[in-house]
Length: 108
Image 1 (tube, helix red, strand yellow):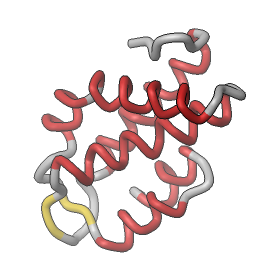
Image 2 (cartoon, rainbow, N blue to C red):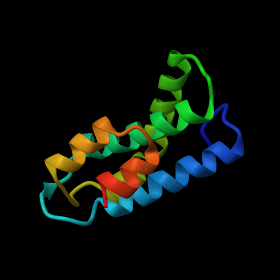
Image 3 (cartoon, rainbow, N blue to C red):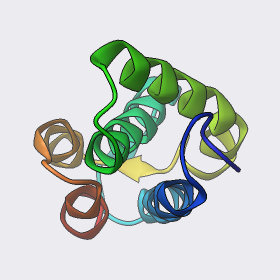
Image 4 (cartoon, rainbow, N blue to C red):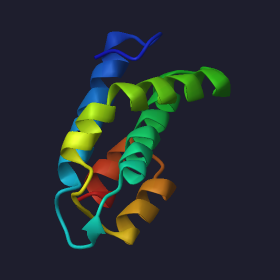
Protein backbone atom coordinates (compact mmCIF):
# COMPACT_ATOMS: atom_id res chain seq x y z
CA UNK A 1 0.00 0.00 0.00
CA UNK A 2 1.39 3.38 -0.89
CA UNK A 3 0.81 6.81 0.52
CA UNK A 4 0.33 9.19 -2.43
CA UNK A 5 3.41 11.27 -3.20
CA UNK A 6 5.78 9.24 -1.02
CA UNK A 7 8.76 7.21 -2.16
CA UNK A 8 8.35 3.44 -1.72
CA UNK A 9 10.94 3.23 1.09
CA UNK A 10 9.03 5.69 3.28
CA UNK A 11 5.80 3.79 2.62
CA UNK A 12 7.23 0.43 3.59
CA UNK A 13 8.38 1.79 6.96
CA UNK A 14 5.01 3.40 7.57
CA UNK A 15 3.11 0.24 6.67
CA UNK A 16 5.37 -1.86 8.90
CA UNK A 17 4.84 0.42 11.93
CA UNK A 18 1.08 0.57 11.38
CA UNK A 19 0.74 -3.21 11.11
CA UNK A 20 2.84 -3.81 14.22
CA UNK A 21 0.98 -1.14 16.18
CA UNK A 22 -2.41 -2.59 15.32
CA UNK A 23 -1.24 -6.04 16.35
CA UNK A 24 0.19 -4.79 19.66
CA UNK A 25 -3.05 -3.20 20.80
CA UNK A 26 -4.16 -6.71 21.75
CA UNK A 27 -1.79 -6.86 24.72
CA UNK A 28 -2.44 -5.57 28.21
CA UNK A 29 -5.31 -4.77 30.48
CA UNK A 30 -7.53 -1.76 30.07
CA UNK A 31 -10.73 -1.57 28.10
CA UNK A 32 -11.76 -2.21 24.51
CA UNK A 33 -10.28 0.27 22.02
CA UNK A 34 -12.74 2.40 20.06
CA UNK A 35 -12.61 3.12 16.33
CA UNK A 36 -11.63 6.71 17.21
CA UNK A 37 -8.68 5.53 19.32
CA UNK A 38 -7.52 3.16 16.61
CA UNK A 39 -7.79 5.95 14.03
CA UNK A 40 -5.78 8.18 16.37
CA UNK A 41 -3.02 5.57 16.68
CA UNK A 42 -2.85 5.10 12.90
CA UNK A 43 -2.93 8.87 12.33
CA UNK A 44 -0.21 9.60 14.88
CA UNK A 45 2.12 6.95 13.47
CA UNK A 46 1.48 8.20 9.93
CA UNK A 47 2.10 11.81 10.96
CA UNK A 48 5.38 11.02 12.69
CA UNK A 49 6.64 8.83 9.84
CA UNK A 50 5.65 11.32 7.14
CA UNK A 51 7.22 14.26 8.97
CA UNK A 52 10.44 12.28 9.44
CA UNK A 53 10.58 11.16 5.80
CA UNK A 54 9.79 14.47 4.10
CA UNK A 55 9.86 18.21 4.49
CA UNK A 56 6.33 18.59 3.14
CA UNK A 57 4.17 21.53 4.10
CA UNK A 58 1.82 20.95 7.07
CA UNK A 59 -1.23 20.85 4.76
CA UNK A 60 0.38 18.12 2.65
CA UNK A 61 1.32 16.11 5.76
CA UNK A 62 -2.27 16.37 7.01
CA UNK A 63 -3.61 15.21 3.63
CA UNK A 64 -1.30 12.20 3.67
CA UNK A 65 -2.34 11.38 7.26
CA UNK A 66 -6.02 11.48 6.23
CA UNK A 67 -5.28 9.27 3.20
CA UNK A 68 -3.41 6.79 5.41
CA UNK A 69 -6.25 6.64 7.96
CA UNK A 70 -8.70 5.90 5.16
CA UNK A 71 -6.44 3.25 3.65
CA UNK A 72 -6.05 1.48 7.01
CA UNK A 73 -9.65 1.83 8.21
CA UNK A 74 -10.70 -1.74 7.42
CA UNK A 75 -7.49 -3.21 8.88
CA UNK A 76 -7.87 -1.00 11.95
CA UNK A 77 -11.46 -2.13 12.46
CA UNK A 78 -10.46 -5.77 12.08
CA UNK A 79 -7.24 -5.74 14.15
CA UNK A 80 -7.61 -2.92 16.65
CA UNK A 81 -11.21 -2.02 17.52
CA UNK A 82 -12.36 -3.93 20.58
CA UNK A 83 -8.85 -4.98 21.60
CA UNK A 84 -7.55 -4.02 25.03
CA UNK A 85 -5.95 -0.59 25.47
CA UNK A 86 -5.15 1.57 28.50
CA UNK A 87 -5.40 5.30 29.13
CA UNK A 88 -1.64 5.31 29.63
CA UNK A 89 -1.07 3.78 26.19
CA UNK A 90 -3.24 6.40 24.47
CA UNK A 91 -1.50 9.18 26.41
CA UNK A 92 1.86 7.79 25.37
CA UNK A 93 0.76 7.67 21.70
CA UNK A 94 -0.28 11.33 21.90
CA UNK A 95 3.07 12.39 23.35
CA UNK A 96 5.38 10.12 21.35
CA UNK A 97 8.13 11.74 19.34
CA UNK A 98 8.60 8.84 16.88
CA UNK A 99 6.56 6.03 15.38
CA UNK A 100 9.10 3.60 16.79
CA UNK A 101 8.37 4.91 20.29
CA UNK A 102 4.67 4.22 19.80
CA UNK A 103 5.33 0.63 18.71
CA UNK A 104 8.11 -0.23 21.16
CA UNK A 105 7.06 1.77 24.24
CA UNK A 106 3.42 2.85 24.13
CA UNK A 107 1.81 -0.31 22.78
CA UNK A 108 4.22 -2.88 24.14
